[in-house]
Image 1 (tube, one colour):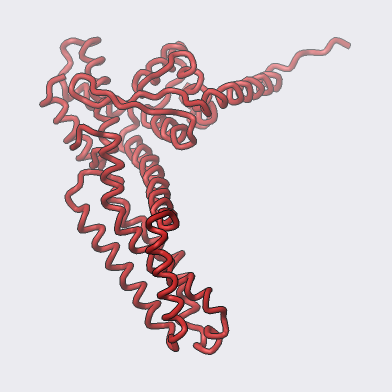
Image 2 (cartoon, rainbow over the protein chains, first blue to last red; image 1 turned 90 degrees about the horizontal axis):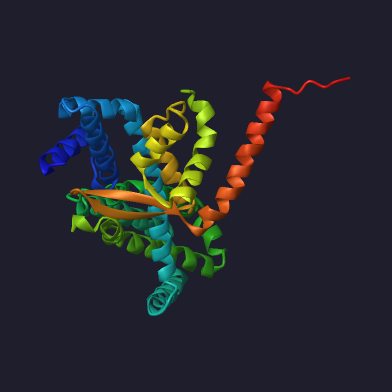
Length: 217
Length: 112
């Protein structure tokens, strides 16, 4: 099939919501193969008619929707895996040195903290900026995985900063100081490492997609 | 046969069986193969095959290879080690199910 026709299939898919390369690639081949088969079996059939017939056989818009939904689930899992793997990486040499330095710095800091609210608000704010940076960093990438990475971090914010951070905001400072300081140290170290790990996401997600589709580079 | 609900549970074992026989296949080839081997009776909406393939890939049953074919990328699927082990189980599960349904639909008459 000529590059012009492949380009036309690509445009058709984009118009129907299949925008990014990592979800388009397999469908481009599917539609191109379906069109080629139709043109072999009915030699006079125009390209557009064959393409529309392939779209109907695929299940129309609903077919695309199902395809994208499945791809999104795959992407979510990949992002969770990448964040988890990066965080675990901070427990390995030589990054462990950085984690330990951070841990002992927070241990000293927690000793002198009388107000826990301000640092927790600070962590939340930093994380929001990280998500904004992530969206900006991947704005020109034609790939689903990096594009979804920033959106997927909503749950990270909710489960980590909101659920774990809210008690710090609403509980009395005296009751917080009664808790073992190593607990606060561990929480604050985690709150610091998490945005640092997320900052790696644009690089990791782009590399992951390029590994699968080297022709993109 | 167009009933999606009937096909839903059987699609994964069918995919695994075909891949076990053919070694490796791409999406469109699988669709055509299912259609031909069922004598045209199984009409899967093509859009439904890919989510099933992606799910099997996520579960670690399938391995994937991308190849350049006529100016485009083609994604080939093949069984991984976990997939080869699962194929037998899934097929015997499906056969048991089909036999059970058949015994309900066509009960053997008992001679008293």
